Length: 159
Image (tube, rainbow, N blue to C red):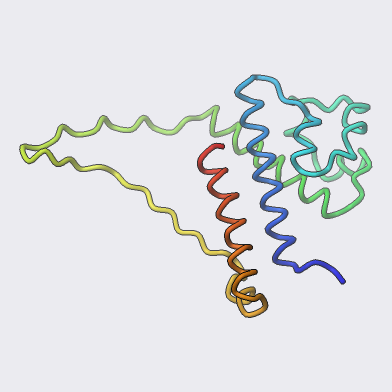
């Protein structure tokens, strides 16, 4: 009996988020441990192949699906997980290289002491959550959504 596709999707999201967190913390130290990155994706079995082929932080962002096959990553799921994490690495590198416009200084408070602030709101919908809610007991659904919230909080909070 296989695992529920929704839980596999959550596992994949969590693995990519963990890889991003590992990458960001490594980038702060200006050194990235490829082994730690692979472990964060739960793909540590490929660490020796990456070492044997001299894959480092400069090479990693340019790896392709064909490169991964050459490294022995024959599982489509494993390749997809790595390619998603590599795409996230590229996106992170681009955002660091080309910062956005500098925000305007906050306006001075008016005579009432109140001030106007810009607010960003993010709405997230869990794909398949309606179907999932009809398949799971309420307590199990609460646990799944709670695990998702924890992953998001760790990622957004930078923990």
